Length: 634
Image (cartoon, rainbow, N blue to C red; front, side, top):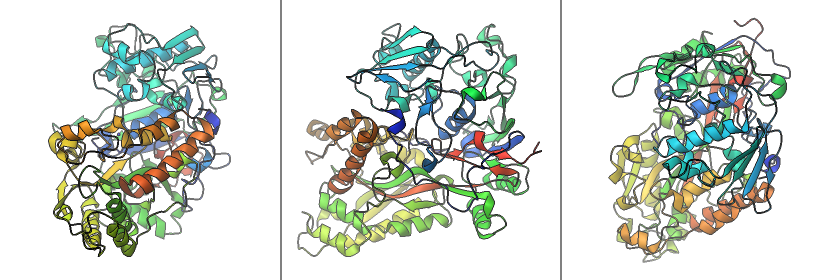
């Protein structure tokens, strides 16, 4: 899993896996998420702000951001499984059959999955007479593998478990041997390892079918030639001529990317217009009501200007960011406007991370002391003050363990092992090897001049200063190194990145993490197993003694949860959900690599024309297909 925040440089038994989940629902500010019988029709108008528009890509194999993923799910693409575009407590994290005719057949050893497809589902123009077949799914996965071998997209990370996937991508094989198509409606997937969350992986847009010839010659620009399979298509798609050489094809007129400056900022806004796919049959799609007739999005604009246009009714909403704080505060305080404000938990975490190979954080008692010493509620309260939270976020809730409750069936909803308590923090420090005189305060040299790498984004530096003050209670003296996100993550200087084990960074403030799909496998593995070393596993959990020596550490061993993660990955259904919750408890209490302190919320103001609204828990943004407009909204 990777963090997917707009503008950031960064990352089974299907029905039962998360059926007990809930709790990430919209609060009572808005009247309801969805009317009982919302009207259909009208033109939904919105804008994607500069921070999201400048990186918008509608190529399903290349796009790795929540904004295009939300557009794919709601509107443009169908996958074997997908989501219903609702918040958690309305089933929004449960993968449901989409192109699939039902649940997969899984072999006894868990290594072979067989999917049967619905019959008669067709593509949008210019392929409106072409039915979707199993070969089209193989074609999409082959393109995914090929682009992944060029470090484009996210294919190998999630689909490398398919036998022969990486060999095909590298050119070592002329097919993906783990994919078989006995007939047009059957896809057999053979795996190299048990992968209980495969149905979740087949909700990802990279697996959406591609008709023969549609993407040929378009490795760099398929976004403007995208063939839709969902209820909407890009306006003008019917005029694309796939029979012509790729260099002679005219792109769909409805997608005009913004013009960017040399440094990547939006210079001139672009536009995206979605219209109904005439080949889409609502009787064959139980997940998308497709309420608007037409969706018009401006690609680019300042947050404040977009908010003004929503106030004035020129736009119905901002897409790709929360509504600005000042606007939300005004709507929250005005009874006449409260019905147009919706707030939902969107499952993105921010945490203080500790490097377990760097003293004094090689001692679990020190890590527990840090967890008890930090006043999380005070940090969350700072989100609503200028300069507000990171990446335009300004609302959140205190989180008390390592993963969102939605991924764990709410089993840990009340689990809070480290409430703020400076005296309890000092008691933990007394139990450590770094309190030499037993006074609850670290008096070893390792607690002096402790480097803390801080992301210079929004209020995070102010939170870091508060954390620095909190930790003085247990004798840890932080020296804050405040750096912009490209430096923090290593896009500018990999040598000093939070991701580089050789950098020996003791503490990171604050590391962000969000779901690619709502299941524990993609959440825990990159953060806490060996696959994330040199990346999001900044705590170095699972590193071997040889690796620690190679990276220059004096500490010779660190904890590992590799076996525990693998045990969960081999389960499915309710047992798998419970396994993730138990792993979370173990990490939180026995390993303590992070101090997660807040989970973000998405606040959305809509125009008075909107009569039904839903939050898509998968993307973390509004479900455009479920937004209904007042009758006559042209």
